[in-house]
Length: 106
Image 1: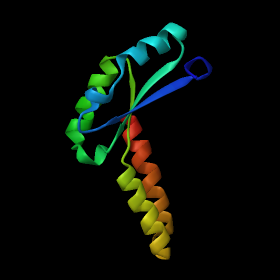
Image 2: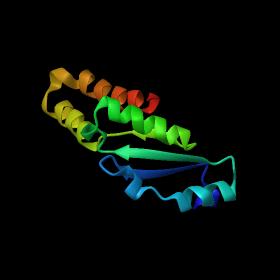
Image 3: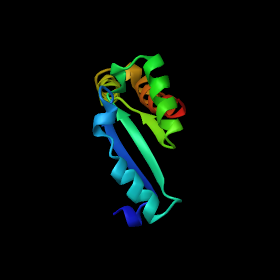
């Protein structure tokens, strides 16, 4: 599948991201094509402080990786609020969208 992909995303746990990172996969992706994008998606990022997210973003950027921060729990909470409370529909949608977008920029 790497051969047919433009982007390869590794999903790692925010509590121990290096334990789940696969450098062999990153190397293989670049062997297949130096134009392919290697990306790390740090899940459970709600466990990290803003400072920790910045440090991880700096680390992965220095390693030549794009990094995204995501929290499935935060997303689920936004969706739950959207379903349960009609008055917060737009807030729930925006909250989830901004959360992922903001974390992508770090």
